[in-house]
Length: 418
Ligand code: PMP
Image (tube, rainbow, N blue to C red; front, side, top):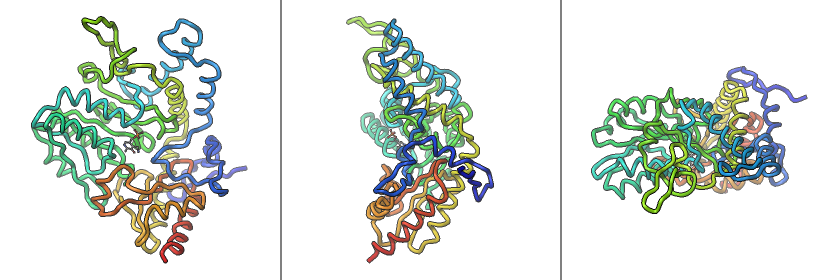
């Protein structure tokens, strides 16, 4: 029988062995060694229930939705539509109408920049992001600012990788038309004080978008409590299929926004003289959606909701503490991102060693880490490094796996340093 692991910090019992059994890939091998998957910030693994849901859709009721009167189409439509309510409850939106299916965080941000942004940002205005944004929360705003003659302002961060709130306050002005910030940094692990960031912007009636690509899997997201105006996340980072994502927007904002793409489903009537658009959320969902994967997203979120959330969080925090202590005790290893509030993402560099070489070495031991800039080049620039080695943990990871990482890093230093 598998033992229940008691986490060494919180003493909370979290049955890691039991949740691991839900993820078939974790039983696998890499280069003949048991797989140790520490690339969760790039994408999470999928539980069997999600895989089964996809197989069930394609095996038993593959059909286009919302258009067919036949049995299969009805069944597919029902399975698809229910996911909107699963998402609504998952992030505590006040209405299903505020949930738009997109293909991921990147599309969620691009949608808002090119609809809300194009309509409301004018020459001389300012848009604020933070210094730790993923490229997908920088480039769409840069493109918008370039098109409109607006300016992108950046909230600086300190040497720990924390947003400097005093500087943020100074950046807010009558010129500010939008703020878009990351909930949890994918390269540093920092969990930002988004509620406070939103509150301060709202004092000046400035809307705020939250990039919850990482936050969605490490924190409980409640859009009403946060009072964010927009929030987006990708399904694939939260146990669900790739190609799925969610954009949440407050009803009154979504209703006032022009559509994103034109096509079927997003219209209520098309005449050559004039087209009228469908109501939200359909106004923003042109064309056949990613039916199977959205149905899989419902299964993924249901799976996650069924996990002991407090136990999972405590376990991830214990893994973070364990790995951070063990890594920083190794001579020549430096952690990048030491914020007080962190999710279970550990980025580090090793004196004299190239991150890529270390990543490739660890791979030979069956350990999957990510190396490089993690789509956050400005973060690397601030720390004056070309990239980091990143190990990111989810609740299915174990302390023994971290011991293997530590052993691997020590070996890499010994073998690669000469
Ligand atoms: N923001 C953050 C913080 C991320 O970690 C990622 C994915 N690495 C993205 C945005 C982009 O997500 P996607 O590629 O799924 O659209």
